[in-house]
Image (cartoon, rainbow, N blue to C red; front, side, top):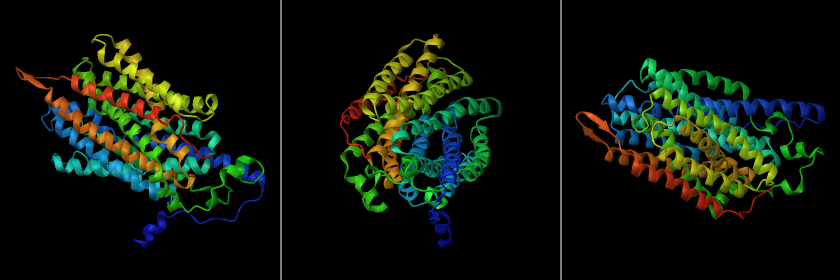
Length: 450
C-alpha cells in the first residue's frame, strides 16, 4: 500500500531553472503536450463510458434487458462517476496527475473488455458502476492541469479547448461505436473502445507531466508576468491545500452552481443515453443514421466549447453568466425544434442538433467546471471539480432511472410490436434545461478569485 501511495503522490520539487530561454522553451513544450494529453486522451477515454447508449435497442430487442433495467445499469455509472469524481477530485490536488490520469483510463478500458461476458443484471450494474468510478479520474486531472499550467486570463480559452474532449468522445461513440455494433454485434460496442483505450492510456502516460515545480519551472503566474515575480493579485495567502478544499463547502455560490450543473446534466445525458433509441423509434431512423445525427451534434459541440471560452474571455472579460444565459436560451429553443418537428424532416432535425450541440457544450464548459475553477482557490481546483461533479452525475444518474421508468411506462405491445411514447420523458428532459438556466442566472454577480 505504501508503494502504491508513493507511486501516485505528487512529485518532489526540483531546483528552479533560472535560464529564461530554457524556461520559455520548456513551458511551451510541456503545455502543448499536456493539452494534447488531457484533451485528446480524455476524448478517446469518453468512448469507454458511452457504449451502453448505442447498444440499448439490440439489448431490448434481444430480450436481454428492459428499458427500466438499462436505466438501472446506466445510473450505476453516473453514481459511480459522481462519487468517484468527488473523491478523485480531492486526491488529484495531491496526486501525480501524469500517473493518476493514465491509470484511470487503463482501468476503465479493462472494465469495457469485461462487459458482455455475463448477462446477469447485477454483474452489469457492478461493472458499469466501477467504470464510472475509474472514469472519474479524468475531469479532476483536467482541472489541476488548467489551474497549474494556465493563468486566469487564458483559462477560459484553454478550458474551452479541453472541454471539446467530451464532444470528441461522444462523436466517436455515436458514429464509430454505432458502426461497430451494426456490423459486429452489440458486444463490439464495449470491446472496441476497450482495446483502443489501452493504447490511449499509454499515450497519456508518455505525453503528460506533473506540476511545473516538479520540473524545475516557476509557477505559471510568475512565468506569465514576464518578470519572474508572481503578481500580488494572484498570490494565495499561506493557505494549505486541505484548508482550501474545505472552504468550497462554505461557498453558497458553489452549491448553486452544482445544482445548475445537475439539472443541465439531466438534459445532456437524456440525449446521450436515450437519444439514439428516440430517433430510431419515434423519428424512424436506423442506428447508423441516429448515431450520425448525434455525431454531428457533438462535432458542433467542439466549436461551442471553444467559442464559449473565447467569447467569455475576450468579449465579457472572463464574466461567465451573461454568455451562459445567451447559450441557455438558444439551447432550450433547439430542444423544442428537435422534439416537436414531425418525422420526415431530417435536415431540420440535424440543424437543430448542431445548434443544440454548440450551445450545450458551452454550458457544460461553464457550469461543469470553468466557473467553479474561477470561484475557488487554485489549490482546490481538483476538489471543486469533484464537488460539482457529484451534483452533475447524481443528476445524470437520477435522470437515467426516471427516464427509463417513464419510457417503460409509455411502452405498449401491439401484436408483438413494441410502441414507445416519449412525451413525459421529453417534458422531464426540457425541464432540466429550463431549471438550470434559471439557477445559473442567479449567479450573475458571483465573486471570482484572481
